[in-house]
Length: 359
Image (cartoon, rainbow, N blue to C red; front, side, top):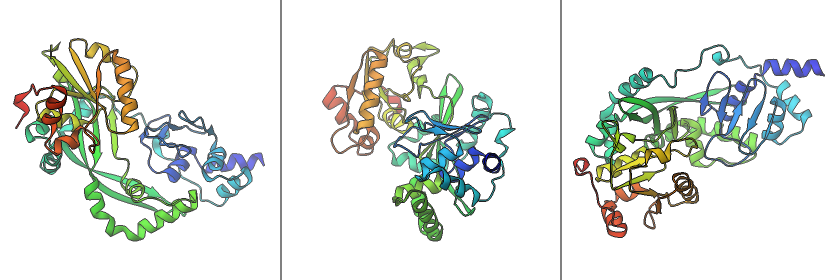
């Protein structure tokens, strides 16, 4: 029995097997892959898959490949072994021998950001539809890039879907610190009608695995990948506005969003100084905002948004949380409706300060 277990593990490398079940990871490096956990609802991926073990740092589920199958398929150990016996061996990916990607190489990130800017004419109409002025988008190096996502099925068949993503580089004092690629969902929805046979197979594959039906949005994101992809470090977005010649600016106030670059650019377009922050401990929040007299955190109108707003204010040690008007999800929706100034200045007495951005 032990020889069988050893052989099955050798024939089915855990990282590759999990990827065949859950799709491409959110993050891949030399030591582990990161996925959204299959065992609990989450927005931030916390499931890490190592060479021969896995662990979710959100809910705690862990083990080897047989534990994964038991937890994922809701079966016992005997059934898990039979499933592996009945599946084809998986060829190992190169990620076991290649060097880590240069995710923090500034030159590489800058080249990638500039390459995406070559497709600025593709991204501009979308940015304008999101209330972002062309001057702001161009200054932010916004662009568009093609993305490929592969979906693997039980029977060994796989499908590769191409989609467009809008790239949003995060720069500070001349350096590109990270690039966020946002899925162009409208163009993906437009393609759905061309993939009816593939979608039927994907739905059946998921039904066999989970005994549940996929929603339309689940299908969209399985085919074309997660809504956001991050490359590089996670830091305060658009931090240049806090500084002038390397010195913190004595702005009378600052608006903060939960790291959504498009929200920040829409606020800048309307003349409001704004930055975005990811939800991550260890950011120099107090140091970054020490010269700002008043800080307002614009929360999304949902529970997750309120939790993040409370976390930021706690980390900063001060600040006021404000919520978009009823019926609006976030600041960008208010901007699209043309009601930013009426909302911020009319209700909270927060006037626009950056007239140069209002084009």
